[in-house]
Amino acid sequence: MSVNADSDFAPIETRIRDSVGRQGFMTHVGAELSELARGTCTLEVDRRPELLQQNGLFHGGVTAFLVDNATTIAAAASRGQAALTAEYKLNLLSPAIGERLICRARVIKPGRQVAVVAADVFCVTGGIEKHTATALASIAMLDEKASPKIASPA
Image 1 (cartoon, rainbow, N blue to C red):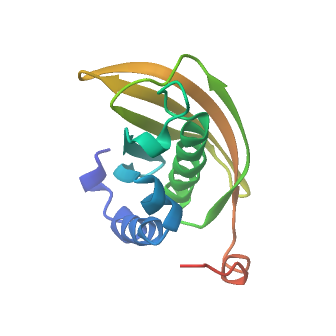
Image 2 (image 1 turned 45 degrees about the vertical axis):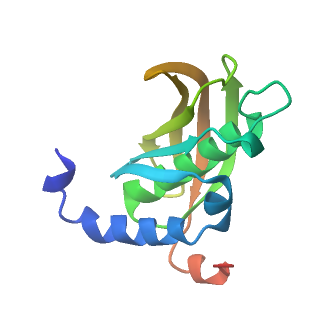
């Protein structure tokens, strides 16, 4: 099914994009939500000196942030409800050197209480992607009663 054929997803996408747009850390890091569909999310960030560690590589914390946010967004997009990271396992596969980092997350199991989401991170150099990290996350799905109790700083 194409994204365009999923008319029920349009209000969910609007809500998620608005919410992500209010996240100060997304703005601080300079990350952008480039793709969003039911159960999937792609986040990207361009290379900037403040995102690098001492050897000129993307800092592992930037990779971890992208995984954390992309997996949660993908889970929220799968069921149209708020979500929070419960845990994730991140494997750094190779040095993250390049012009851009891309994190693609996809829901493996969209549970009612916990969604299992996988993510892969790629560094882009000269238009070529290199797989630099992979992760598996457990994302807590929040019910309508819990969501309003969590105050948004935005």
